[in-house]
Length: 206
Image 1 (cartoon, rainbow, N blue to C red):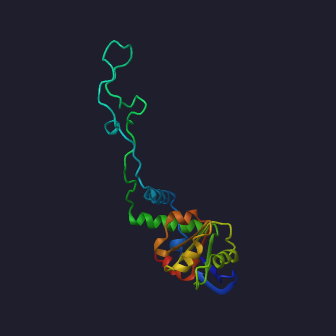
Image 2 (image 1 turned 180 degrees about the horizontal axis):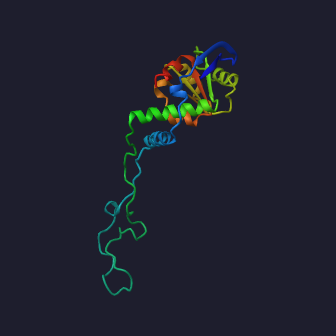
Image 3 (image 1 turned 60 degrees about the vertical axis):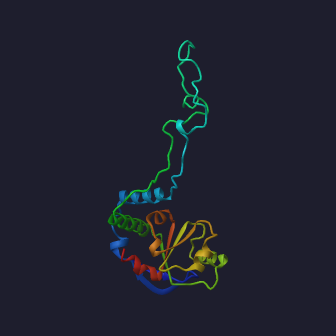
């Protein structure tokens, strides 16, 4: 698949890049995408939820009423879950929600996500650029020139660029990542995938 390379002003540069069919032209595997996205979201969870069980409630251990003759159910502790203020039965405990996925499955998921973006024409290739200062206004102008303003865009850089990252940080629906940080969830969430020219070769080696 061949795409034209645009400048940051949105004009054609006369150059083209070839997107590898082994990455951008495969038959997408929906289940691989589902598993990779599920793992990504699970890893975002803190898992610090906790409720007190009856053994952790502060309160008297005195038997609150006699065993028989009251006409109601027997009760031995004010901390029982059946009473207001008592412990919770099978409440949440701190846990790790993460789970393991094989490396090849995660690679298949990323390739499947990129192939979906290629099918829908959601990929834009822009020539390498840098910013002398982290100016949000300048980055917003680049988005406007590339006609991704208002869309959820994902800009993929070959290497980290602090100024570009800081300039994009305050713009809604805009995300900047490096090749090493690229993940299936971000690709699928983006409405427009903006690839910097130097990052295309790296994507071909996924």
